[in-house]
Amino acid sequence: MAEECVHFVKFSDYDWTFDRVGWLPWNPAAFCLIAAVCAIAYWMSIEVLVLVYVTFKRHAGIYFWSIIFTTIGIILQTTGYILLSFENTWPVILVVVICKIGWIMNVTGFSIVLWSRLHLVVRSQRILKWLLVIILIDGLVCHTPIAVFEFGLMTRNHNTYYRPMQIMERIQQTVFTIQETIMSCLYIYHTRKFLKIGYPMQTRKVVGLLLLVQLLVIALDVILTLFDYTDKFTLKCTVHPLVYAIKLKLEFIVLNQLQSLVKRGLTPGLGAAPSLEDAKSSENRPSLSPTQSPFPSARVPVPRELARQAPRFEAGFASKAGPVVSELDKSSPGESMTDSLSNEGAMLGRGKHDSNQTLTENDEYDLRVLVGRADDVVEKPDDMERQYLGSWGGARK
Image 1: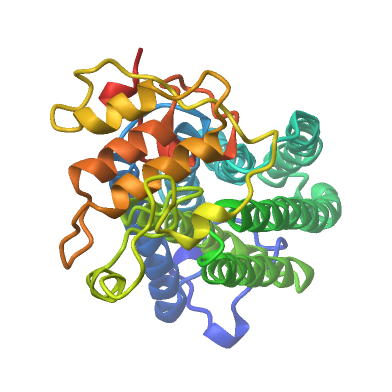
Image 2: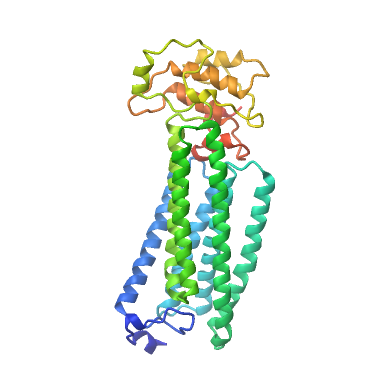
């Protein structure tokens, strides 16, 4: 095998298929390409770990841990592939174990990321349950034979496992691509429905961004699938960790968009926090009664199943928000969430916002009301702020 490693092979004649046995033959261009792709995958994985820690205020939940799980899998798969391809003294069995564990963690782990994200917008527990069952079944059916065939390729009976591995590799890549596409499309569909209720002015922008991200993800999956069907297994193994690292980075594009809605005061039923231009234009408008809301989106009807009673807080909850708290305390027990938000929107309309649209104290109070429960379970779409930004300290009863 050592002689194979030092033997030079032209890049045009390089063998990227399953048929290769032993270490990678020497070619500067091929070695530099593999090293560069693996280095980028390492870098992006470390960056994702840092972003997860900084972005999430609550280091808990399936969504948080599934991202961590997937990222660690990318690192393990990249490490295993390097040890499996370049000459070293590591035991082959141990290297294959590291590589396959990393592959299972990042492939099924990313599906769990997509599944846990659906909890924010999908209310049907039946859909979520069946999707989880499908993920587990696909993982068991696809991961098990691939792992067995991979060990077989490392033995003297390489040719015996070559054809089964080639067929199963194409099947599993197709299955996981379809699975991820279905969950991403469900997320886009239900997010669009949710935004129409509480964020009508931002629906087109956010949904357009989600579609763009999904198209990029599909394009990456198509590239991996083409490598499989053209029998470029070594090349696919090289770019596979990088592709999943890019997918995780794309997750943060969606996450940052959702965060920006909340930071700008875009809460369901209230719309955007008024900008400086809005405040100037409002001076020429007729004055509103205390029960009217200055936000156009406050008149958007909320479905009965989403309406819930506004939570109550103690008088000392917000140090300078006494009048607002007293108004909430005076609300009748049967008052719907829509009425409470409408009244509160009128009060917040009299607040001042700086040119950077930073949250004022009244805005913070408004977000606390909408965040509601402080538990770890995401049951309603209006818990999106709590899931991504963490529960406010004052929201606990």
